[in-house]
Length: 190
Length: 190
DNA sequence: ACAGCAACGCTAGCAGTGCTAGGGTTTTGT
DNA sequence: ACAAAACCCTAGCACTGCTAGCGTTGCTGT
Image (cartoon, rainbow over all chains, first blue to last red):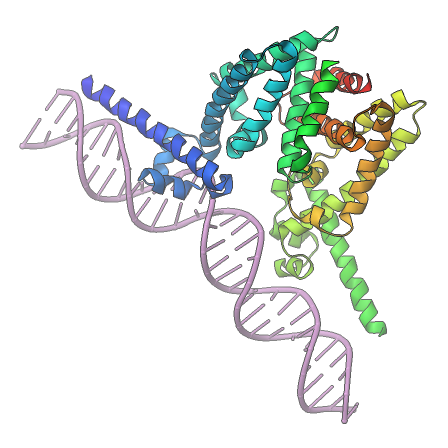
C-alpha cells in the first residue's frame, strides 16, 4: 500500500512536471516551440511517457489552460475588490483582463484560441472559468441596467477578447490600446 | 512577345486556380485539410509548382484572405447602404459582419486569426481591408459622439470579432447570439 | 532549319511533426 | 527465488511544409 501511494505520488509529480515544462516553454518561446520531443527532453523522459499521462498534446495544452483560468480569475478578483467604486471596478477589471492577455500570451492562447474542445467539456475547468466569468459579471452588474446580466457580461467579455486578439495579431495599433479600452468601458457604463 | 504574354496568362490562370482550390478546400473541410500535396493534386500539378507562385503555404492563405477582405467589404457596404436610418445601419452592418464570419469560417480564419504577417504588409490588401474598415466607420460615425471615430470603430470592430471568435470556438452559446449582438449595438448607440 | 539554351515541372528526399507498437529491464508480490 | 506485472525506451509510421537536382520540352538566334 505504501509503495503504491509512493508510485502514485511520483506519477503525479511527473505529471505536474510535464504541465510546468509545457507552460514554461510556451511562455518563453510560444506554442510552436512546444513539441512532444522537446517536452520529453525537458522532463528527462522519453516521448511515450507523455502519452501515459495525457491523451495527446492537446490534453497537455488543456492542462496548461486550466492553470491559466485560475490565474485569470484571481487577477480579475483582485482588480475588482480593490476598486473604490463600481465605475472604477469595471475599468480595473477590463484593464486586468487585457494586461493578463498581454503578459501571458501563451497562456491566453491555450485558454481561448487553441485547444478548442477539452477544457470546456472537462470537470474542473468550468470551476475556474466560472470564477473568472463571475468576476466579470460582478463588475458588469451595476451597469447592466435593464439588459440581461449574462448577455451583457458575455458581450463585454467579447469586447475585451476582440481587443486583445486583434491587437496581438497586429490588426490594431498597440499605442491606442488605452483609448480603445476607455471607449469600451465608457460605452458599456452609460 | 505574343508567346510570352500567353505564358504569363497561363501562369496567372494557374495561380488563380491555386487560390481557388485552397479556398474551396478550406471552406469545405477547413484549413487543416489544406495541405500542399492535396492542393497540388487539386490543380493537377506537382507540389514544387506551388512554390514557383507563392513563397509558402502562408502566402497562399494570405491570397485567399485578400479575396475575403473584398467580399466582407462588399457585404458591409450592401448592409449599410440599404438601411433606412443610421440606427438601423449600424445594426445591419453588425449583423452582416457576424453572418459573414459564420457562413465563411475558413475565410474569416484566414483573414483574422491565421496568416498573421502577410496581408497587412502587402500592397493591395490594405485597399480592401480599408474599404471594410471604412464601411464600419461610416456606420459608426453617427453614434461616435465626442469620441475619436477611429477608436470607436476599432472598439466596435473588436466587439464583433470577439463575439464571432468566442462563439465559433464554443465559448458562447450560439442561441444567444442575437441578444448579445443587440446588446453590443445598443451600448454603442446610446 | 536547326543547334543550343533556357525555362519548366517532375521525382525524390530532407527535417520535422504527433503518435504508437514492441521488446527489455526493473520492480513487485507470492 | 521465481513468475508476473508494471514500466519505460528504442524504433518506426504516416504525415507535414519545403527544396535540391534532373530530364524534358519548347523557345530562340543564327
